[in-house]
Image 1 (tube, rainbow, N blue to C red):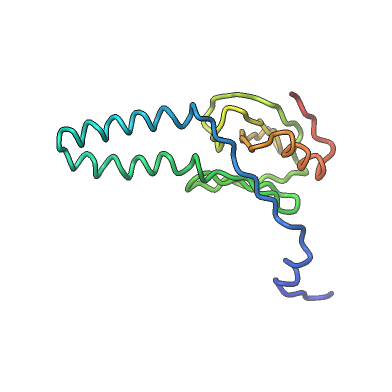
Image 2: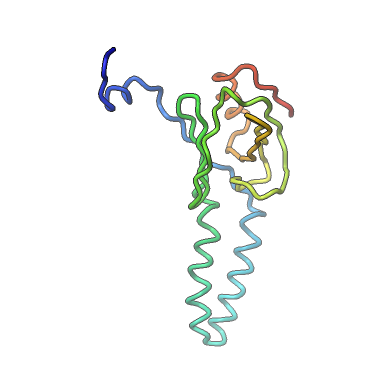
Length: 149
């Protein structure tokens, strides 16, 4: 049994593919307009305490929109949205992928989404920038996935 170092193992691995989430302007516009209105009214009234509260809330709400991505590492799909790291999905257990615009809360910054069903009745909804290319990447690893457009 050969004991290879961690760096040797990493060299022999396939490169990690990172795909960013698509961002729907409609999902970003609503919180931006509301927070800008509150900030404007706070500045106009001279309420600097409100501004000190609104500014970090504004950043916390927008951060996930621009920091959501999906990584394919070997046979695992890793999902990250803002400060949240979701459990990895074993791509070999994915049974079905459906194109959807389901508005459920999920690590997806767009309404152009994919619902991935895997394992024992589990699912996750994501929104990669190019859904078709993303599905092809998953099918290259697990050709048994059913795809429903």
